[in-house]
Image (cartoon, rainbow, N blue to C red; front, side, top):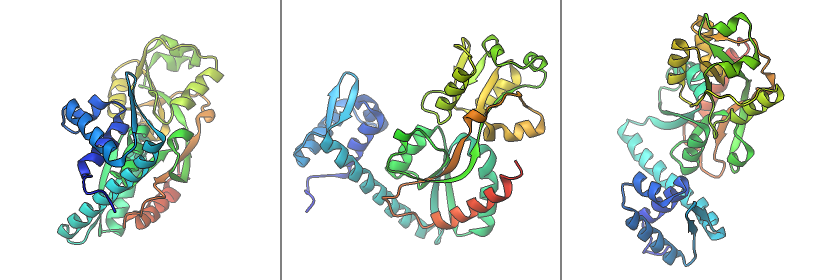
Length: 306
């Protein structure tokens, strides 16, 4: 029997603390004071009868008991969210809600066509779309905020406990505005002469880009601007002398239209799989399977054309 003293606020606080890594950040995210957050965690540990977190100046780390409890705490919150979604579904006259996370390359190139097809083939499905960096979306998937994520496979430590179904491969490109001086004599060595929009740590392509530059003898880039914002990258690169290092799908439309120019570098070393990520330990949302079929059909039609 579940101890009657445990409340949803205890579970929410614990999961948010592990997500944020620090008590103060978790408190801000839940609109609580830090003393209130500490008190909630203390109550939970007293109910469980075991320490769940170790606190230090560097942040918080899970105890072995905390790792076990976190797994089921996430599942519990995910189940509750599905329950709320089910109630909302009745209000939407039977339409199933599917929450989809998209990495930038998928959001810019693939997803608009998938949504268009889904609107025709799955009128009973309502979509909620969230885009962002890999680590952010994966955390939302684990917590149950998202039903699935589409994008690049991340580093092994970020993919533990998740399933991955590959859809296609994608590589990284270097793009500039038309008329950029580097186009007169394209060279990787010239990267250090210009501002570079660079993938930050935690993004799916960051390790691949780092490996590519090292393999080609490119040293430290002094004028590096790190961001995963596609909106910023498009405008800034078009209006400046910046060189943008980004997944090909993010800028596929702009390159095809001539708004951006791809530099002629062999970036095959950065090729990696793009796919569908799910939580195998959770009951799939009702719309996952029909949506997956539409997704695969669109990929089969579009990827060869690329």
